[in-house]
Length: 493
Image (cartoon, rainbow, N blue to C red; front, side, top):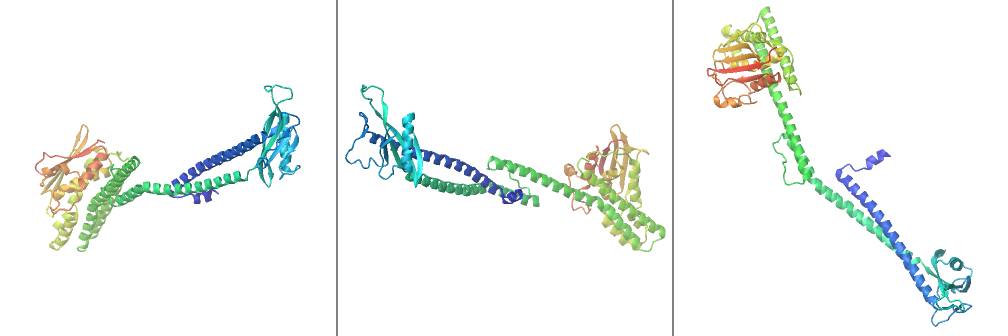
């Protein structure tokens, strides 16, 4: 039963509201129809009783109760007056209609009313069925007792019972009932149609706004609903949809940024793998050289896995602090060792036929063929309060940028401080233009996009974001003029 009700229930809001309006209107119309027809029938019955009493009063004027026995005075043209009239002296029947037998159903009912009036003195009306419904009413005819003064109390000397056929009244009541039912059906039909039209018109802006929101969310559009000239409910809906679109756009922007950052960070390990394979395939190599190539490729693959885990962990909600400690000097020394023993450096000392391979590596990595010295300075052991993988991802973009733009030298300096440790990356390149300093850490921004160097402008924003997630910071020293100087502040371990 419940399944059938669920299938019959409208699925649209317009259908449900129309059904609610129709149900409500039906209940109201049923109550009004019942009350109206009850009032009409009561009013018609009162009209019938009034007519019976009027006729009884007219007949009573023809009855002489001043003398005994009671007599009915004959008057000219009283045939119409005597129709459906019974006259009693006490319980004795004096006259009855010619159409009604003395022992008929209607006469017996009239006799019963007259006897009740004589015995109890109250007026009564009753209905009997004799083909049609017949209503009878008994009225007393008062008379003066013999020898009494005219002002003395009067007593009932006779009773007049009148009857009327209720068929016309019932026909009128039935006609009004049918008319009211037809009116109800018309009103309910109009209510349903008008409700559907009104609700459909009211929901049309909602449907339009929904379609626009769907379209805008797919293309990450900048368009919004705003306030506009709308009803209060639609304005609130528009504000909610605007907030939803902003959140969707933020999520899409976050996903795009995450994708760009991953591709940016994975580019160097992939380039390293490609370079190692190109260098290894350039000519036959010894077993030791092949083993070294395999080791380098394995290290690059492990670096790629670490990059993915670090960036994805930081992208998860709530990843604001990362516990762990790391020897900063050991991590930075790996960077210097990789630079000194990279295929690019090996290619510079090989014979002339490997020049093509060297150029391929340079194009892949984005580094210059000319040598760049990288130095590391600092205490033997400096502990930072971040994991090694996270420290690598913070300093790697800074070192890559320094190697990319340096003319001949890159210096890495580590120094402990009262509020943590400080890692400084300095190069002797052209530096950061003063006009670009404010946009330096904005994703996707580059000072000179056509400078011939690869890059997407994502390394520095990623380094700062990762540092902040660990409670640190990455800053640029604008006062440093001979090249570029970046400082990484991290909590002490």
